[in-house]
Image (tube, rainbow, N blue to C red):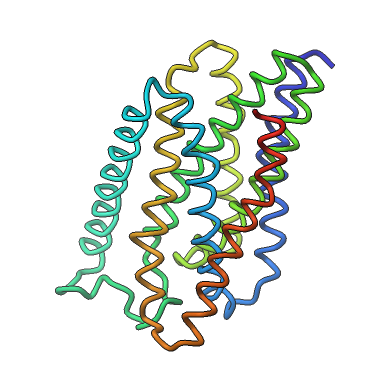
Length: 261
């Protein structure tokens, strides 16, 4: 195959395979597991943001200060987007006081799609950057491109599992969650096209926005729900699952670094 054909095939496969594996894992989870898996999703999001995306954003930016500014702007952007989603929900259904909050009284209630929407936006940015990395590697050499694509698939799987769980937590059906994740994965092809068009100057911004979305959703939307269960056993379970989410990113990190470094 030509390098261009390799780029198209591996960019397409890189997005779809990680989503497919993650969806199989998430589909086998029982509905009662979703509140528990939210803790794992938090760890996967924070691990991906601080160990994978943010370091690359700082490295690609003009300076660490510029990268930090982009992340801060991204957090503000996602705060405004969430407010718009809340406003739309209240406008359509009517909200009195704080009734738009989780009315189930526990971490398992859905949030009217707020977290899911923000995760999809951030994941789209992340997939876009993955496409840039795949194309850049294939331009260097075909073997490096193949290894890079495989590394991206490997380190995307734990994050995609977390994203899928968050979509279910936000009230998405399994089918809708799968469809939206697949659509988001197509951004990998767009990123590959941009890389080939020598428009890589925007990559640091997209990386920062991807990191901002992960941090914001984990800290602002998901962690507060965990505090509704204060008993020691629940807290210990949450800490262990968050650590497991981070560990899954750490275990995939050496493979990704060896290929992308």
